[in-house]
Length: 135
Image (cartoon, rainbow, N blue to C red):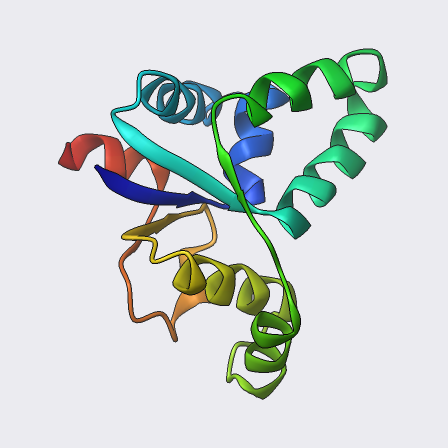
């Protein structure tokens, strides 16, 4: 089973039903629910998702997070991931933390809408649409 790291932007696409991106994100969630893929994200991304859900869909924020948590695994972010991110050549610190979290969990692929921010990646980085087409 493929280990798929799902970046916060893709998670928010699905949970906030962002037009043009929601279908692919929801399809990823369905694959995780069906145990076709092992969906995962970092604990930091999970908190970031909560922040935006609370801002844009406060009444449903915890409900959506509980449902999401039931289908994806969380990767702990610790000193190692932070230190590697600080030493990295990533231009975006948060993306570096996500990357090293994915690496620590032995993810096979990172799914994001910000592919350009992962130029330093040693594992494939795809959009949700690209990943789903390749299945």
